[in-house]
Image 1 (tube, rainbow, N blue to C red):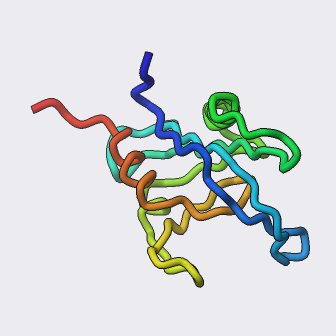
Image 2 (cartoon, helix red, strand yellow; image 1 turned 180 degrees about the vertical axis):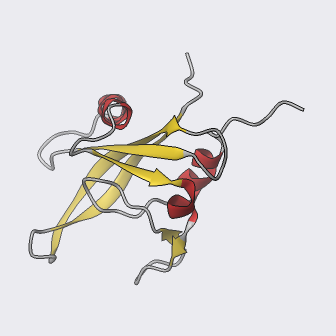
Length: 131
């Protein structure tokens, strides 16, 4: 069964930041899931972004990561989730070292900016009025 309220982005490689803001040189994989929490228009839509971050000593399991990220996104206000309005997600920023602009909205655990591809999928979660 395919969920209509979900945009998922598995296997994102992220460089972690330490508590002091210094980059930790280990790459970790994460799964990001986004659900529409409330609203039915581009002006009032609120999205919850959930993330599952793989331990560097574990083998990444895409299905399990997606399941954890979805659960965190659905339950909203927790350590592994954050809420955004559409305008926050759509705002693009040029990050140093990246060729393409990325969303100003970041994943809750890794702090990685969301790629533009998922931004387009998120827009599709807003119901379209029937004509």
